Image (cartoon, rainbow over all chains, first blue to last red; front, side, top):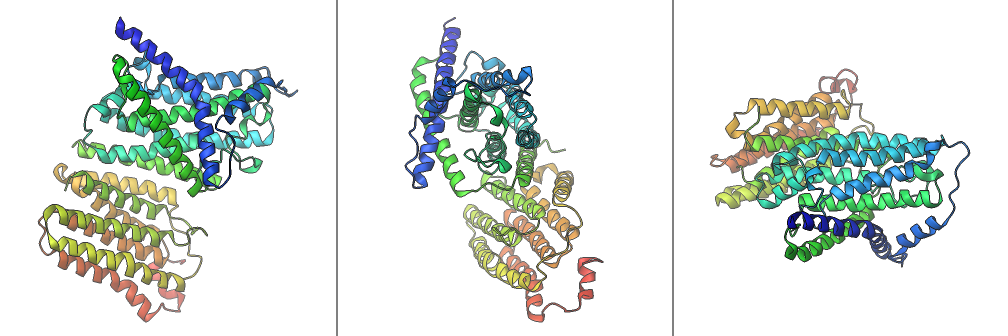
Length: 320
Length: 209
């Protein structure tokens, strides 16, 4: 009973931090990027201000939009919020741990992306359609890589839930660091593409011809746009937490043991800050590739996932 | 042989092999990706030799690492650049597209798994696959530079096998011999020049090279 209550409490704390802190993560990353580029940059709290400004505005609905136009802005953040509740943040064993199947997680992110893509297609304007086509093309390759990574991690961590994999990897030496490293590289490539980051897309890019993720909500304004922007911020936090929980599960707390929480929270904070810093540095030093080369990058991620599986099976002696 | 660092270096070499297959036309930002990848391969190979030398306490392997570093990471890429400058700027298109050849490469990886006995898979999978990928590169490319690099990459796979197998006698001699063999082709091309007659390429580069 106490364990259940603690799990619930941990989930509430996790959700509160995740939902409230996601814009802060983006703001801090943007600040760091500006500083590294020699600019002063907007304040760290700027994403909150942007969201508040957008919420206060009256949204303009295009004449040719269907009834579903107003539905997509709610579907997208809802799906990503559900994924956020399943992702282990500072501790394992939260209330949703049993349901945090990796493929469910991929599916929830997929629903979020589908809602964004359909929103981009909603009014039938050119840039939205182009962006939608590109986003779907990227996700096609990205999901293939991700499924291979799921296979590797499930074999390594003896579980299919995010929680189980993370705990399995934390518990002991996996015995196959090569596979883990290859899987990590594949996940990093997919995460960058899914979040519209450097090699695939430019989150700050406002040049219509080259936009992918940013092109989709171009026809949205006011609170609808705020929802899409918030969903993008939340998605970054979810992916970074996921990578931290699966590949660097050190210092993660257990929901049932309150005394481990402070260390877990601290390590979560350090991991998120470290990942955000690494992301910014990566984006500064690596430009984006041409749009039609992104599938090649993601196919490379699929290759890495495939090699991860092969090396794992070979090292376990299950080759043929 | 099956310690994680050796395996990791093997996996990196394998990735370079796939990278060579995936190389398409040169980018302005990265003019000669194949030679750069070959150089990376050489550095990985040298690292593997140093690591094995450290593990086995064998000075010969450290010597092999030094030879590899000097010969393959510095000397050979220079020779290759000199050849590449003489070749036509636009090489003929490969017989197989980059994506398809990587898929074929995955098939060769499967073949390597099937060929190797289960006990030696962990140690020999990467070298054998790099060798097969080099062969595939020679088979699918129609330009002399790619084929030369494919041949050199094959030889890297062989050297990785020689270095990672513990207790192989005469490793240092083997390394020098293989380096000489590997250098012979580019040196001959540089010294004697490329034939002006384009028909002379046909035996190497296919009918429409």
